[in-house]
Image 1 (cartoon, helix red, strand yellow):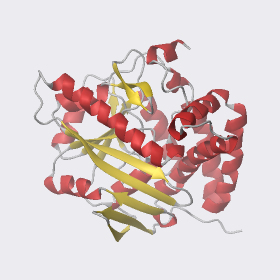
Image 2: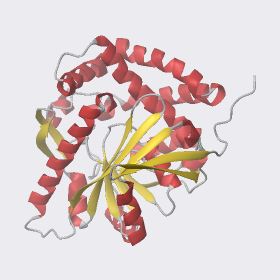
Image 3: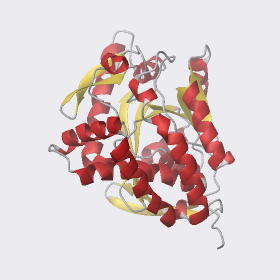
Length: 349
């Protein structure tokens, strides 16, 4: 049987939805590999936390297996395996299963059914599986709809560097696809060095051309690198929903109860006096993804006296927008640990 090569360059379609209208734009998939992927908080790494030990540990073997299957059999055949993977996690990953149940009970406001737990794991496995095709520029396989794309286009046109703040909500790779298809967009990701090395090893195994610009945290020149990228007009991406070790956190309301969010990303944005845009790539089932860009905060005019309050307000708004998107796409939340347990208590588990 002839093997399908997902590395062939194809034309991709991204539908831009602005002001109630839908505009379909077709661009070639051979744009520069400017990426949005990975995770970042904003301080030097400290002691391990629950999330660093638990969920990511299973991603690497899963990615290797799914890459091998998908590159040989195609997306439809690969998706058949996803149900087995989701079933495996449902049956044999009790910590993740409990976390899924607790989250779904909050977001659905009722006791979730077993089928909904399965659907949650299946959505997670699907977004990982789709990375393979997005990294190999097979955008033609997907129906990608972008909301708020004018924010990014205006920033690129003005040459201003801003922060893109995301979360483990939906897919990062589908946002990478937009970065590759929109001329002029250049993105660097801020993340811990160990995570950066793991991610780049995975990306190299899937598609060596997909390696990304990463600013590792914990180095003396980390902040200098962030500032240089911003001054050069780049977008600097961070994920702001997971704390590490004794990092400073803010406890704010999320889905009906206080949850810990790291203060580090907002401290960096406030210190460098830059605007912040929320980025979310939601999986909607089948081959559809909805990408949302929203203005979240603007620290350009903050002073030393107002910085703390501005950071707190930004975190509250960030949590509120995550809740909004989680309620509209409840199976896209991929933090498979007790998100509402205080961070220090999680670390002691």
